[in-house]
Amino acid sequence: MRIGIIGSGNVGGTLGSRWAQAGHEVAFSSREPQSEKMKQLVAKAGATARAATPNVAAQTSDVIVLTTPWTAAKEAIESLGDISGKVVIDVLNPLLPDLSGLQLGTTTSAAEQVAAWVPRARVVKCFNTVGFNIMADPAFGADKAVMFYCGDDAPAKKTVKQLAEELGFDPVDAGPLRRARVLEPFALLWISLAFGGQGREIAFKLLHR
Image (cartoon, rainbow, N blue to C red):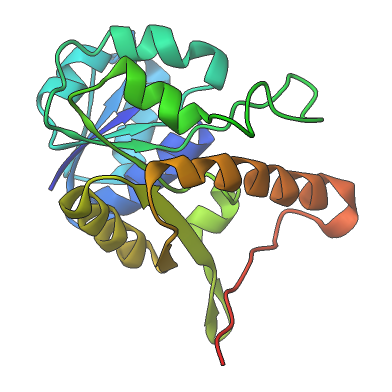
């Protein structure tokens, strides 16, 4: 699978590196793809990784993963060109600068805003409810951290489920894209617990009986 990572910080770097190490062709995006930082990231990710501008990363990929800060999301998306038909994984959380709450929610979500910006792409919300350290290793002994995802396109959701499984998560379909209105506040719960005394090595599990 060809995967373009838009935003190559901790989250994008971790997700992209793990998928590259699993054999996917990963393009990490940067305005300066030849920078030393990008060279180090590509070298760490392995032979199937490369660096490219955001436009090239998006145009040459089947799956686009948005991992920028929320405040930079619209500009980043506009730099990608026409991404009609592509699977877009929205990892964004519309956090306030001090992490005390969300800039939007309840009646809409970042995912729905992203879908409005790219109406012909297939947007799926996923990977927004834990930190990058859990993305690097979702295993807790014999248990796997749950990873909720939501979207309106069934084949796109199947692709995202596969990618989550490859990382070692327990992926759970949370329904249509509007369920991001729940998943984004859920991410805030993880952040509040992680920085409120529980530490970052925490995740959630869905129990059945």
